[in-house]
Image 1: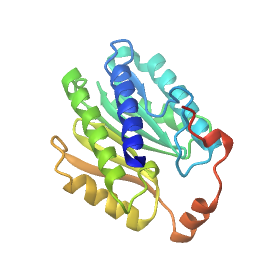
Image 2: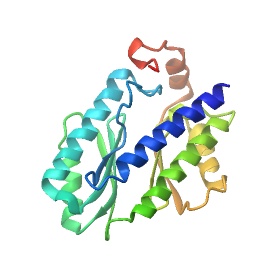
Image 3: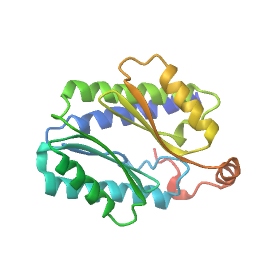
Image 4: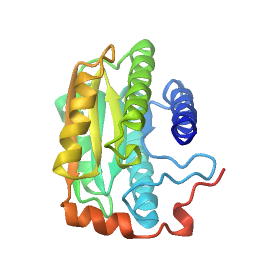
Length: 216
């Protein structure tokens, strides 16, 4: 029952992401929005989760103002590490996007994986969302992984794995992603923050704050 419930949550999030991602009015996508009052239960504090969402929104707004609708950029912040994925028209636009992300308050680092090419098609973006959903489901099924410790971003078939995880978890999640027989995956890129086993034990021992409880 527990895994079925998690799968239901993931399916709902994937559907919501699909509706946002395919909107013609939203070329700049935000990776961590709160949906329906649900704050993801993960290894960040509730405050950091909200800060990540604020970073994503501010960065996306700045990119929209400076690059307009021509750029297709996904902005994903995890523990104040910003991942930029998508397509831009020129090297200058790529550099501008990175500078803009780095200039945001409380950003610790930026991983710029923007490519210089035409924006991906609606069909490709739909496939990317399906890939992310399928991989999240595999993480739920894996008995030796905590699925909610990982954030999955897919762009043009490239899967980016984010999260605060141990070396063992990083390796295992990578194995699942590469060996899960999910159609359409081109490669897997690890964008993890590696923590020690002791740090994981400390995080696991902390009670969830009221803000981090799921609101259904």
